[in-house]
Amino acid sequence: MDEIQVGLTPARNPTIWINDAWAASDLFEKRAGVYSSRPRMLVFAELGAGQDNLLNMYTDTPEKRERWRAHRKLIHHAVGVQSVRKYRQFQNNESRLVAHDLLRAPDDYVKHFERYATSVVSIIAFGRRVESWDDPIITEVIAMMHLAADLNVPGKKFPMLMETFPFLARFPNEIAPWKYGLGKKRAFHFFYALADEAAQKEDHKDSFVNHLFSERGKYNLREAEIAALTGNLFGAGSDTSSSTLITFILACCAFPEALVPAWEELDRVVGPHRSPSWEDEDNMPYVKAFVKEVLRWRSVAIIGGQPHAPTQDDYYKGWLIPKNAWIQGNVWAIHHNDREFPDPDRFNPNRYMPGHPDSRPFPNERGYMTFGWGRRVCSGQALAEQGTWITVARVLWGFNIKKKTRPDGSTVEVDIFNYTNGLNMRPQPFECSITPRSEEIRQTIKREGRQALQELEQYRGETKYRMSTFYSRNDLAMDKYGNEKK
Image (cartoon, rainbow, N blue to C red):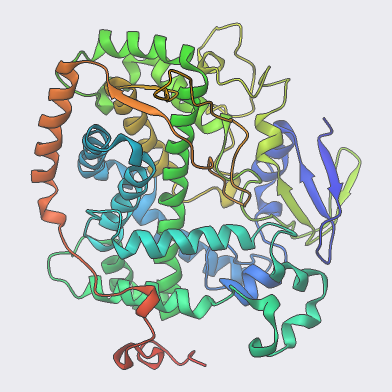
């Protein structure tokens, strides 16, 4: 596999694809000062989410870099490496409820994972949890995240025509079907309304939105920026985390042999009378390796998120990489390179066991590049890794996960390649069997679930807003939140 490829995509400029872990590390990590900007992205960064969004901000001037640093500092206050440790108690309780929900309704595992991931982020952002799957924060936010992921894929959606033919952006929306789905103001105003609502509640003083409003004067934050930072929090930890957990279930069904060492380790270290805790992590190297393999095997952001762009002409191994070129880290190719990951489509946690014959050198300590690189690494990485470990460990401890058996005794097969097609991917719906491993474990799950509900009671709350009815009420007219209403 070539380290670097130039691909012709339906855009104004060719895309340079980085297919090699070592090349990605050299460019995006070691030369982060050059490769941390974004190219001009008409669809997503200008007509879509815009330059108020941390993900899209250009950093090719000192002023733009300073604004980007301010946003990054604010988001790190919520989900930085040091910050996420204080969320462990409620994150653990939400994870306990995942096990309890799987016990009650195993066929709805997708909904349970989406509720869990969104609830954790909602507590951080707004100070209130998500109790059920039909909460508007799930139904509306997840849908928006999926749309944004689709719009980011070159050539997939009609709006990408404008990257090839920028003059199409000048047409009025009413006669421009290629602009469908680019309602950035609609999404931003919805997130701002949620933030404004939460900030006015007296019992939510530790929430992220309260921090944003308290720092508003210091950073001269506009309403669109508050909305974007709030939305980024959900993008960093909601849809991506739930998609990773769905992939975990698929891997268990497709590779049952990988579960046996995990069960042996969990039984030895944890036992049936309590579920795993973070204190167990260092004593369970195979479970830790299992989680890493989940993150590598089918990474959610298969092309590494938004493209990078160098702020100057650069050379790498004889290649000229022009200033402002589209540089895309190909996470799928990196994680499926036979050199680092022999037989890459096989789910094999032993790749991450120190000293194991299946282990190979990798340019970073984690052994994967799931969350991107350098200064543009996913803001929610620490939160996602923390939550993925505790939830995967708990579900492995509690359940036998396998292919479903039909009434006639035949097995319902799963397809490890049947994934959605977007910037973020997840398995297409599949059936499986999820049952408790023992009666003792069943009782432990029920007991811990009841305890978790009691401890999470302090985060109960609801919102009056739904995107579907957001513009049907006069009191929500957007001139209340700014002068951007058209």
